[in-house]
Image 1: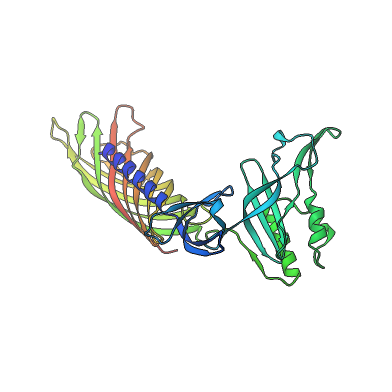
Image 2: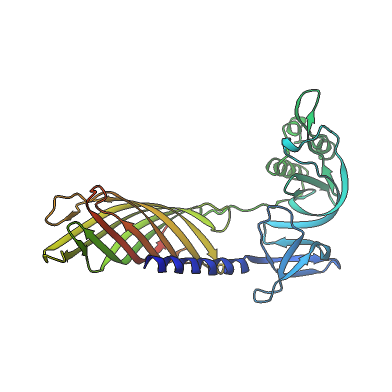
Length: 393
């Protein structure tokens, strides 16, 4: 049973992964080299580094096509990503201190790059990120895009690493407004957060519209589900002989707190699930025929991780794993003074979520040994069942 369930889970995981790879398309458009706006769906790759191509579909059901940077000038995905192709001067020096050279001066080269627009307004901020460096650029009104000069280098005289922060003077010379002070510029760090705030401040000060294009964090970072489950439990007890109890239906009730670990749509979640379960059954010794009854109740605390695989905008598959600590309460086994132990066991589940409000899950709870404190006694208590959940918070 356990092997079959694991194989089924892996099969569903592979299917879900393949399906999710085919999704992730969001409404967007690109501007081709003839200045035509082509609307459709673009694969949202949540780009860590600036792309050189995009996957585009004319509609949700059409086949995707790969479009190179040479075939478009600009593209937009949803409200969080906007890229523009430009011919710029860029210094490609490594940002890490370990790779820094002893040359302070920047070495610019001409390149065609797809820049990400971060802030739009009278002054527009752009970024470009590769595996080894991050650079920022700016333009004022419809003017040429100019680099914000920055470089890490090693100072032989000072015997230490330094930063060429020429960008501060460049901003002071070009972004002048009553609310922009020398102190603002002096404290300005070369990162997206500080620069975005600076450009937004300038645009608002100059009376311009201001549009900061950034990833909107998921507001549903904490959710609570009420859950109920029913399962088939297998129990064996080996003392003077191996007693197999008939499989028995078991019910459980739980509350699950889910903490979304992703910035945007659900991807990975951390789970906390307290639950109560009750089980009672009767078996008999194979030789003597003496009957033995078990009455087991426990309060379980489970901690786990869940991975989502998007199917549509409203539905997804998920796979989760738990580690469960079980505390017995008013539990006993007949004709015995044995104490049922606290337990620790893993579980594996996979299921379906709809509208981030309802879910159903097939879960396998791996064996827990209820008498693990006794060296001469062995037992196995495992369950396969269905758990349904409803989000109320």
